Image (tube, rainbow, N blue to C red; front, side):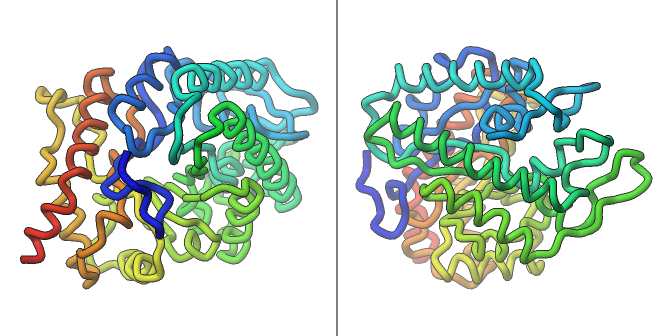
Length: 350
């Protein structure tokens, strides 16, 4: 493993995955991750296992004194934990057992992912209605407190199982732009939950990141990623789908300011829909991948020198929809491109 950069909690020229992988076998998934991502592996998520393995349900397994259940295919606050919440805890335990077996002697950064507070509040319904928790400020506060306590315990357990790991906590927030824009639908679908103030969203993210006492980052694979809020919440890095960043748009300016302030970047550079193409075993070539990142740095007017320390290359989003061979190939391509970063950055600067 390369030496870890003093400014960032990962080795120079690193690649990692967003989180989800295809299949249902946690031992197989962690073996692929450790084999293809030797500098910055992560705890795989396997949503194909069904309720409790999805983004919301997996994190529901960590909640403290906030029971939930599934009803009509939706997660809902309840008086006591439902069967699927108990199942989610069992699935998470199986994932941790597999990670401990395969990586118990690992030393270095190791990333875990949980659903962020605002996406969780947008996808769990209130017990007394079908409106999302997001519609009730008191319920949101309870959920954030529960999540913060649960995530802290989760990070501590990972540290206990992999003592040499420097645990990086990733909050997945695909719904965050909709929360800020006031476009999360109510139960009827006819109305929307009002926009949540930027200060409130920042403080909610900060509460969870701070409680975990871990290096924190936020991943958002939707348009209009709020880079400033994420930076101000105390995240050390931000992950996003580079293809959704509009050239010259306000979010690009926010990203440039955050990058210049030292925010790490997990750049989603590889299209995750490649598995639907005939050449699914051969996703984007390393030089093409690196060119996308250096082009972004050029558009932002930031010198590319040193970018290999600040940037981690990832697929654009999770790989649950890929074939096993396609997912392995995607991670391998990101790793190959990351290893080529210093050379190709130098070429682009010449």
